Image (cartoon, rainbow over all chains, first blue to last red; front, side, top):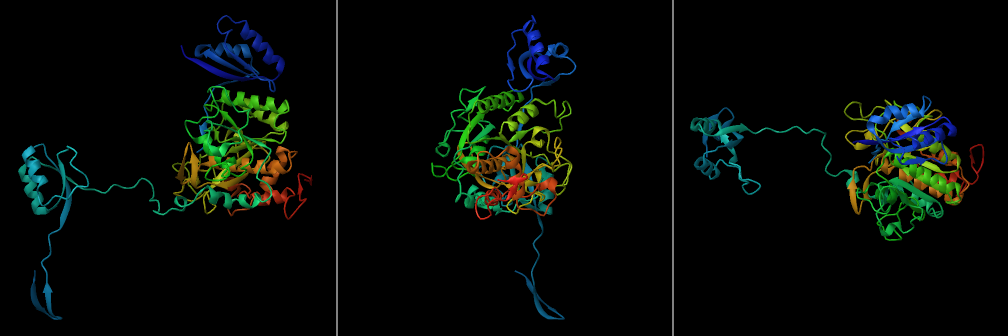
Length: 76
Length: 418
């Protein structure tokens, strides 16, 4: 099963914390590792099954911005 | 050989012309025929021992060619000259004889070193890691990797190059000095994934907020996205928020502009379209392009023409790149020194990171905005569009002067005297 990391930006810390709580209570990916930012209302969620993206979007809400992890290119 | 004939200009010697010969490749599956061809006087002596392919190169006349056709068991291919896919590179290109030391002189780093060598600030290189080499003796204990066991290793070599350019030290055993040879080096090693860079920035910002880096922190990022950011806005992009938060906390960000001015789809001399994308084009960061030894990036076939063009996807108040730096010659890559035509804009950003460290070493209270302004203001203007070279080529000595050190103290920066 392929999994993906997502970086999700929220308009507020309250929205971000509510999302984290919802993820923790979720039976499918409640144990997915979360890196919660101390400084900006952002969270990195790891190892989410690719098919679950739409569910994740619904949990995050319309005001959140969900980005799948991407790899940068070296400039050499 | 020849004969003499009488003409209206006297007796001249007439030589019999040799029939013109063609160079051909002769291929046969007839073993006996192949052996005969191999011993034939037509054959051109090979460069190497036979490799087992029953083909010989020969020079034959048309008459001999007809004879070969008559044998019926030899395939003949006329020799052809392949076209070069790129313009020929001169045999003694300047970069082949130059080194990082020449680049340091080019940006007047050697003159700045009479005032400061960058002791105090920390340069964080977010990259592929840094190899433990003598020139990196001032290694920060805050170095970190979230995916590798140690930040002090570099299987690719790119991060080591950036570190050597920013703050390598000849006094400690390196071949060349970087721009700030006495600055501390922090290796933030990753696989260049957005999530990792996000977490590394979070780590650095946390340390900064907790009181680490009292003499200043410069973050060098020589990577980026190769296309416009269509899926997300500047404000919503997670790294934008972190960079802005870190900048507000006094962290200086230096980013390579990118190498995306594509030779194949754009004219090398063109100053557009924009190819500086994502956070590398933010107003908050110093965006750095590259030029060659003649201080241009609009000349084909040199790779410097790939240096990305502004004005910058997410820039709003200034045109990107902010400045350019020269990249050419021998440089440390991985564990060995290599002569390179250019170091990409990857090799330009660490020069500005080193310059920022020099500035912070004389005044740790400089804000990122002041460092940006001094860097732009002190750059030597070039005769090229701003979308190609920004405010010009960096000048370390002039930057210190603008910052108030050296012969012209107290020049106004950012509305006040610094």
